[in-house]
Length: 561
Image 1 (tube, one colour):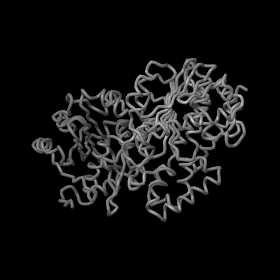
Image 2 (cartoon, helix red, strand yellow; image 1 turned 135 degrees about the horizontal axis):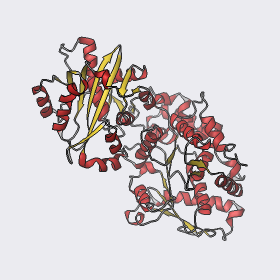
Image 3 (cartoon, one colour; image 1 turned 90 degrees about the horizontal axis):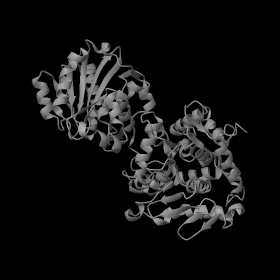
Image 4 (tube, one colour; image 1 turned 60 degrees about the horizontal axis):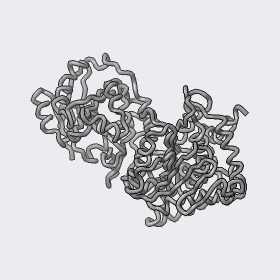
């Protein structure tokens, strides 16, 4: 029995997800499966999957009866539920504490997300230390109570649990007698969320909430060594909700851009490549990647295809279908990721100061606002390859604040030499100006031109021009930005792009979202992006100048319309 985990449905499902020809599972689910399997097979120091904990959970699942199927839950669990339960509840650190403190499940409706969360809560009620407290939060009390309804249904269907000596189902809470633990659903209320001590909590339909309920629960857990937050939701059409941030942090963690994030994330959403050209209308992979239950359940799959047909035919049905059954924002169908982060990372190279010696370079400048990030990109072409080195700047006194707010370790980036702290509460533009003017001396480059956005840049541009740097205004309009945006992406995908190793630039690429105008001109949209993109914008500005030089020579005058 020592290898019971390796023979488990969870491991079997994770391996199935990773089959090379499996296009029914999205890339981020595959990344999470790969990372967890590394733990299962002992390839991650200090982390393991606890065999005893797993066998205990299996025993309890055999006692719990599926209320609809009438069989033990051990036999009736969905594949993804096995993975979620085994990974979240059985993965331990070297001290025997739960390794994952956050579980994120992005999944469409009718995939039993609340039901499976109820199973996890019953297991926690039975196995966590005595006097533990558990909560669910949601946009309203009815939604929050859905978990309680699901828990009650399972308990009442399971003879081994239905006795009141095990569970006591009350009007406002559920008590577990053997552990003296209790679960309470909470309504969205600032007066009632604070002051709770949550050993574990569920945030249901997080896409319909702001961050307050989740952060209130997390704040209550600060002093706890063993804690868990489960955050689940479909997509919602609004641009400002708690789930967006949680998904973004999960993606950055899975992409290796954020460290120290103890989270397990199953993000069932279509890959970026499926979000263009209205592929959702015809490509079944969109359904499969956002609805894991549909992969094996022909009835569910057929129902989703029927709904898709109606959404194709009737505009008024699209928002609900795409958001709730494909995890795609309908109003944002014109919004897509700029370029797959793994494609970007494949273009990284070790820093090589000698390479830049004697090179003519084009600079891209994005000054942003005084209290926000600023970026300078340096680019050149050699043998058809676009080379870049990008620098970031942040206000010195806002480093800690920005690190917490953006979930970006700016101190690590500063220590790595890819980001510079300057000024106090605001960017010291004079520092940036001196930095630019010292580039020829530091790297031995010849600055041909510096491209800039007119916003907040006129004073800096005047000083640079006085010092002899030729500056070119680049209008931040889709008709102007489309071509360099496209060129940079093509260079990345064709592996004709190289950049000096820079995790900050990678985070910016991960954040970047593209929109298109009525003429189908695509550009990186700061407002639609998932976080800071100043370094990508600066790089696109530099690429614009490179492209103009390739087409016309830098002495030619190009009219921007």
